[in-house]
Amino acid sequence: MAILPGVPRRAGEGIKIGKPAPAWMLTYSDLMTQILIFFVMMFALASAMNEMQLIRLKKKLEAYVVENQLESYIGLGIDEKGLVISLREKLMFDSGKAEIYQEAKDILKDITKEIGDVPNNTRIEGHTDNVPIGAELKSKFPTNWELSTARATNVTRYLLETLNFPPQRISSAGYGEYQPVVDNDSEEHKAMNRRVDIVVQRIGTRLKPREGVKKIF
Image (cartoon, rainbow, N blue to C red; front, side):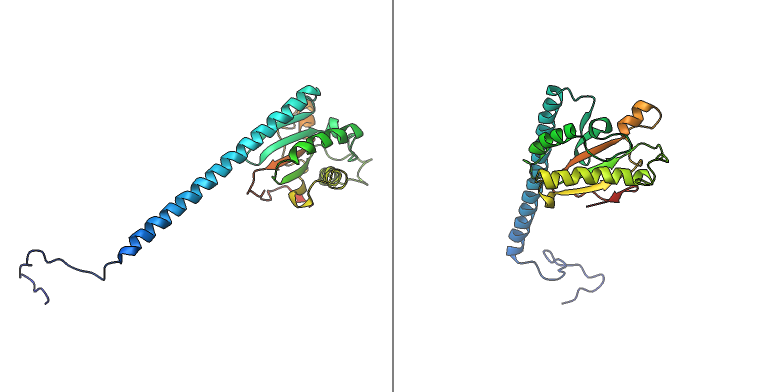
């Protein structure tokens, strides 16, 4: 019976809207919450394990660099992209050229043995300083784009064709002068920017193309 305005409601009588949910819905809701928490925990655990893996790999490579007195030629660091292995130009190439030194190939072989043991994807990035290509080289490399992509391509091909690196786990890109690690305000800084980076990515991440990049593979 409808309750009229001004008529007191009887004790124990409440307003009912809709139908109550069945009892099993509460159990189902709890189950879904627990499953969600489980997957969040698994994702966090996997991320932490992958981070530890990159740290262990970095320590192995640091020991290799020190043992072979390569501190002036190879830089190591972990950032948002993953583990970055920076190979300076003076270790890898003649100025303005893209052919890899034989000694550098031996070092690439040692590095590849370590990074090949982890399941992470790897990206080869070519970088230059901001000095324009000289007139004598313009016929081969019209701009720093071509030089950086050629160097990255040659390193990638060496890893694929000679060292049998898994092709599904590798990509390559040239950044020219547009991703410097330091300002190009001295010869020392320019030398640091002329490099090829081997980026061991975190598992489950993909590098998004950024401004100033030519993708090769």
